[in-house]
Length: 130
Image (cartoon, rainbow, N blue to C red; front, side, top):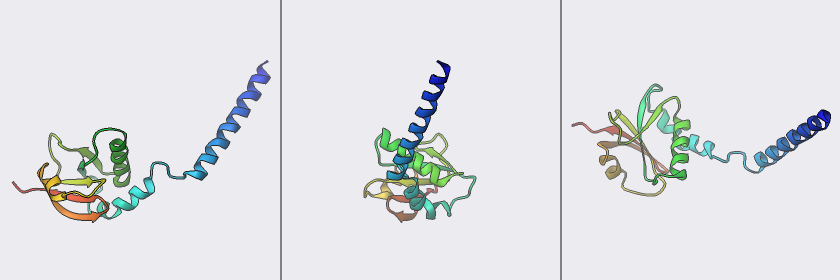
């Protein structure tokens, strides 16, 4: 009886591996991390590696917003992203936008000015001088 259970477990493991392999062939980057790495590559070069960076987006809270935040966090690692508004706003902030909008006004709402617009919804902000 134990041998049958062992054989069934091994067969299920092989079947699971085969299904995962097929899925990976059809969708090698389901979370679009490669795209995020490209989108944020220029911006990451402008920030110190140990920086804490504010984060703003135009997406309402939910799954898409969470995925966009995690993509940006991964692409900008080891920097730490801190969603705005933050208790203590960092010197730098990142805008990760999904549609065209007035990026200057979006930053001003959080006390930031545009340092550089990298296009494709990626903007680097600097804290406005008070």
